[in-house]
Every structure is written in structure tokens, then in C-alpha cells.
Amino acid sequence: MTIKVEPLPPVRRHTVHFLEKANESQAIYLSTEIDASTLVDAKTTFKQRSENISYVSFFLYAISRAIEAYPEVNCSVQGKRHPKRWQFSSIDGKVTMDTLAKGERIVTSNVIQALNKKSLSAIQEEINELKGVSFETGEQFTAIRKLQQLPTWLGRKIFKKVMKKPETWQQTQGSFTVTSLGHVPINTFFPMTTSTTCFGIGAIRRCPVVVEEDIVIKSMMPLSMTFDHRAIDGALAADFLHHIKTLIEEWEGEAWQEGLKNQATM
Image: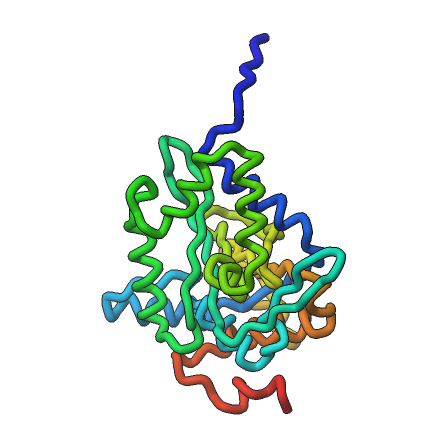
């Protein structure tokens, strides 16, 4: 048997720095199942208008509106000896993407700013632009490419220094993170995160569901949420996740009913 031992490829160094930072979080995991029937219908409606809206865009849109109802979750706790809480005013979402770099598949991420002020179509346009950018030449990946070129010890030091600034944090990490494995039949998964909340979207599957006294077939989607217990508590996190579930299941386009949008404060 031959075992090849080699240094970690530079294209993976940024992931190492991210995971080391994510390990500082005191992560708790929640999961729920969403009746995605209305969401599937909405996606079909957009397709009929020649617009291909991804499920990730629907969730970016819905989560940003849920944060309007639960502004307490729009924060981050940083520091060990003297922890501080950063409360953000802008609702920005980080989305992860499967990217090809030098022949290797890696995870990259970008932050879409002011999500709660953007339409579903505008969010999808930004995602489409990000997907079309080359990792080797795109301006969005300049910082990651520079980080990858540094020795691991130096990259770690610089990454930690940059992450100590609230403004830089918000620009690179956002208010929350959305990641999806729905392109393959994956059920629940719980991603690591540097954000206070991170959402994992699984694949939609047709399942038998009990509705009152009947068994019906519905399109069900697993949704998980990892949250930092230093920043928020379980009761608030559960209410927040349930509100997102409600927004998705009662989707009525981009004009939310005021009663639904504000139900968390009633």
C-alpha cells in the first residue's frame, strides 16, 4: 500500500481558517420540516414567466423578512476574555457556493447586502452574477485568493485580525448564512458557521403526511438551523425558525400579509 503525504493544497487554506473561527461558536442545532407545496408552486409560476428562482433565493428573502420580526438575532458575539455583542442594523445574508478552483471543488461564500430591501428577482440576479464569476479572476474572490497564497500560520493570523473588526465582519460574514445540499437527496445536515444563525437546506421529497385524520402526499423539505448559544437562547431560536417555516409555507408572493409579518411582536 502506498500513502501519499503532501501539504494541504493552498486552495483549501481559507476553509481551514474559517473552520478554526467557527469552532469558537457554542453551536446548538435545531431542525424542522417545511411543507414546500406552496414554494414549489411559486417556483413554477416564476418559470412560466421565464424566471428561474432558486430555493436558496426564496430562503434568503424569507429569512431577511423574519429578522425584521426578530431583530435580536441580527448580532454576533465575539471575544473570549471580554466578549462583546455586535448588533447589526443592516440585514445581510451570506450564501455558500460550490466553486471550482485549480481543478479542485471548494466552498466559497459571498454576502448579499440589504436583503430585506430587495425583491426576489433582484436577489436571484445577484446569485446568478456570483455563479458566473471565475474564481481565478473575479474581484469577489480577491481576498480569498490572497489568503490562500499565504503560509497557513500567517493566513490564520491575518484572518483573526480582520475578523476582530465589526465592519469587516459584517461585510464578509453577514447577518446569517444559507447553505444548500438540495441538489442531491440529502436530508438534514447541520453546517458549521461563524454567523449567529446558519441554515442548511435539504432536498424536497414527496412524503406521506397526516393532515387531521387523512394521510396525504406532500412535498416536504428539511430545514436545519445552527445557532450560537452565546448570542441567543433556544426559545428565541425556536421561535425564529418557526417564523421562517410559516413564511415559506404561507408564501403569497412578495407582499406579506401584515398580520403574518408582525406576528412575532403581538
